[in-house]
Image (tube, rainbow, N blue to C red; front, side, top):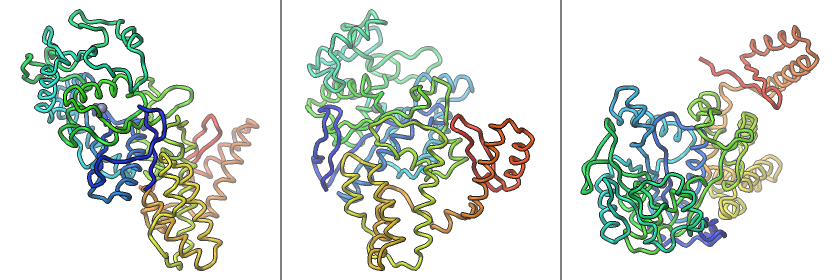
Length: 460
Ligand SMILES: [Zn+2]
């Protein structure tokens, strides 16, 4: 295993060396479950699932422990529960179930642990108590705050100078803070909000302490790899690290910090608050989960990814190409079920999924044009490589079942092109006639900024 990973802390690719190859640990920040999740929230799910699979391949399935948490108490959940007049667990359970269902459809293996904040309260309170004992936290007016002055490396992960962080925090400085950058570990609940007893009065934890406590409880500190979206570097991961180090006196919190880039919708940053919502739950009703998984992995995980329907259609076509090659090669007996060396080398280079996918296409080509021996090797390597990445698990025949054959596809493309031309020429009767002809073939046409896209309607 020659795995190299880009570490946000050192800002370079480093050889991955686990503390204990028999117990490799990875933690990824999970969702706040108050609604169906935005597709952008599933990029880390899919990216770190590939890393989880790669680590299992290298160190053995039982040697890798993967924890992904669930935030099940938070202002948005509280608001939703109050709106519906139900306890917060009802809201959290409902959207956690939907989230896990969507993640499974996207081919993500279940994490080893999926801790929930409300069920980690003892560990959270114990960690806050340790921070107070170690003079890294102080109680004030029903709150407990982390004392950023107690940790000389505060700001090292995000690379922010302390003055900048203080300036950022100064906008809204609570009077009980000793330093503007100090952050909340425990706070009083407002009337009507869920509340837990603690040595500092009734209340609830801040968000950052949840993750540190859940890591300590499920995996034990320090861990090998900590992952999440790039927006979590500051303040969330900076604060997690400060808490973990100061509570345990263990200088390493996570040996490697990995962060994935955003999905972009047009020019706007992916965000639930922007209103350009693309819910994975809705997309999964329109496209195979495997195609959405492919689309999420088509770019390198650290780079932003332009997200649109065309990308998913392209992903579907890529999978059609690979499944098609396997379908035409049913008479070839695979020589191996191992991934190809080139495929492994691509993933081992900081999860180079674009190069790994290119290798899948190269193997599919060899499967179609190689000698008998080359075909036997290519078929096995194609299946083995794709499986490692979570692809081509379906029977090729089934993939195309309920779909359409190449001749029909060609006919549909012709009709769509003709309809586009009619619309450009403002020949509306002809455009409508072609749309009706497509509808008769059970094809739905959607006009987008980059031209028309189409899909076969799901059969009832
Ligand atoms: Zn977290």
